[in-house]
Image 1 (spheres, rainbow, N blue to C red):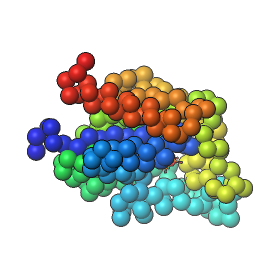
Image 2 (image 1 turned 60 degrees about the horizontal axis):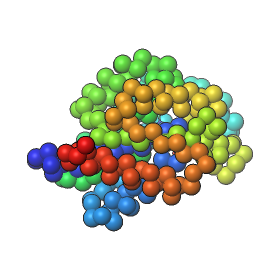
Image 3 (image 1 turned 180 degrees about the vertical axis):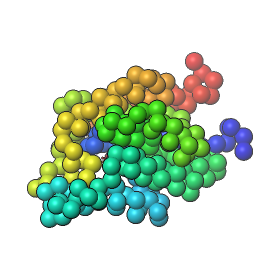
Length: 231
Ligand code: TYD
C-alpha cells in the first residue's frame, strides 16, 4: 500500500493523571467528525492477551491492601515488567495497530514505547538503550508519527493523586508515590527535548480539557499541513 494511504499513528503520553485518556477520546472524536477512520486504543491491555497481561502488570495486591504481604514475591522485577510491557505491545502492534495503519485507519493510542522509556528506563533504572532496542524489536520498528506529551507541570496530576482510601484505588505502578511521579515527569521532559520534532509538549496546568483538546487539534492540523508539503 502506498505511503499516502497509510493511516497516521499518534500517541498520548504523560505521567499518571495527566489527562491522556480524555484527550485520546477528544482527538478521536474530532477526527471522526472530519470523516477520518480512527482506532482509539491504549496500552497496556487492549488485546485479548493484553487484558491478562494488564492484570499481572497493574493488578492487586496494591500496597496496603489485604494481599500486600504476598506482593513482594509475585511482583515483577523491573526487567520482567519491561518485558511484559513489550509483550503486550508486540501483541497490540501485530493484532491491532499495524493492520489499522495498513488499512488507512488513523491510530490514536494512549501510551506506547515512550511510557516504557519513562517508567521502566528512567523510573526503574533500566538502561534506556536496551529498553529502546527491546521495544523496537517487539514492534518491528514501529514508531509513532506524532506524540503528545501532556505535561501537568511539577505541581502534580490534574485529577488528584489516587489515594488508597479514595474512590480510585491506585494501581501497582501509580502506587509508587510522588517522587516516582516527578521522576517520570522529568523523564518525559528529557524525551521531548531529545525528539522535539516528533513529541509535542502541551502544558495542561490550569487548563480545562476542552482547551487542551483545541491545542492538540491545532497542532495536528499544522503537522498534517507540513506533511502535505507546506512550510
Ligand atoms: P494507564 O492505564 O495509562 O494509567 P493512567 O491512565 O493512570 O496513566 O497506564 C497504567 C500504568 O502503566 C501507568 O502507571 C503507566 C504504566 N506503564 C508503564 O510503566 N510502562 C509502559 O510501557 C506502559 C504502556 C504503561
